[in-house]
Length: 221
Image (cartoon, rainbow, N blue to C red; front, side, top):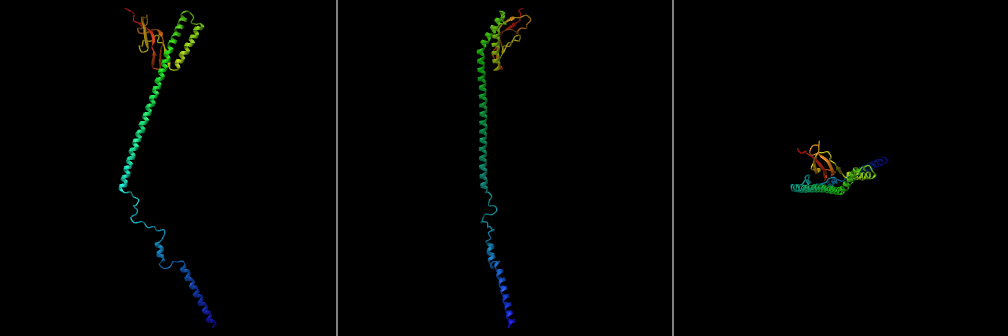
């Protein structure tokens, strides 16, 4: 009796072990047929819509032509703006040059007018010195004062570009000299300045007043 009971107990234990093994295997795998459903609903698989394959991002010929037209219009506009900017720059440069030129002309005219106003005073100072020298008073205090004033006026004119010139002994030049008289002079070539009545004045390359001179003439035969 005891031997039969022991065998029955062992059989029951084996049956329980087999049942537990079947339950463990079933817990780790889906029921039959569910594997196919899971594969069909895989979130990693993305189905492509109908009619949208690898060529969906390519532009149509009409779109490409429209883009070319827009690019051509933009290029024309850019060229027009560039030409306008260049014309504006050229106009401004011409305006700047014109203003500078007008300012220089106005400055020259103003300086010339000032010099012409001072010339008679300078001539009188020169005559006063000549008279003092003729009377033997050229070394007196009055003559020294006149020379000082004369030198200061000439220095002021020179600072603004005005220079006096005295062409004693030079060949007569009608553009620089004004002949007040002509007379024979022994040993001097005809057409030579032998005496200066009044100095000439020039501003840069412009003669403000020609020098007034006496010119040597050929001796009569």
